[in-house]
Image (cartoon, rainbow, N blue to C red; front, side, top):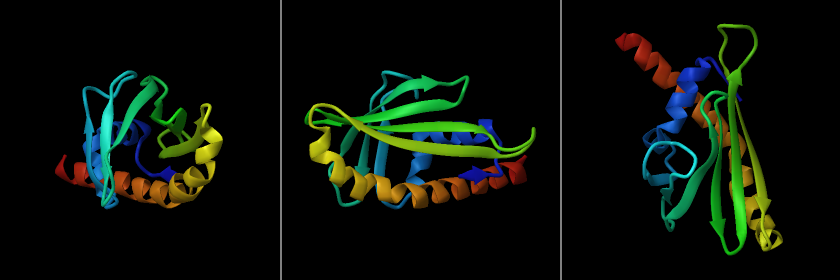
Length: 142
């Protein structure tokens, strides 16, 4: 997904988890410290049970991070990357890749495919639009 926002702006928007609340499927989200490897967080989906997660392998310099959700000997990993799109001064390309591992991964593969994976394209579109909106607001205030 490509957004007109600068890479640094898009990254900073995303790692501020309070910004995730633009997504109406999220009732609440909390990060127990800075967005760095080893911190923990909890997201409460609308109408669902809280989900514990953790930023893993956060690379501020290259604007990459993995978010892990582990349960029942299976781990879902959301690999995120924010990079320049096109020529210098252009927008940001946001990519998200999903992987599943662990001894019980196969047991959850269909559930993950039907749940998380199906929502990624529309979620990425909403995120890109919200980042652009936030950048416009910031520019109008500056």
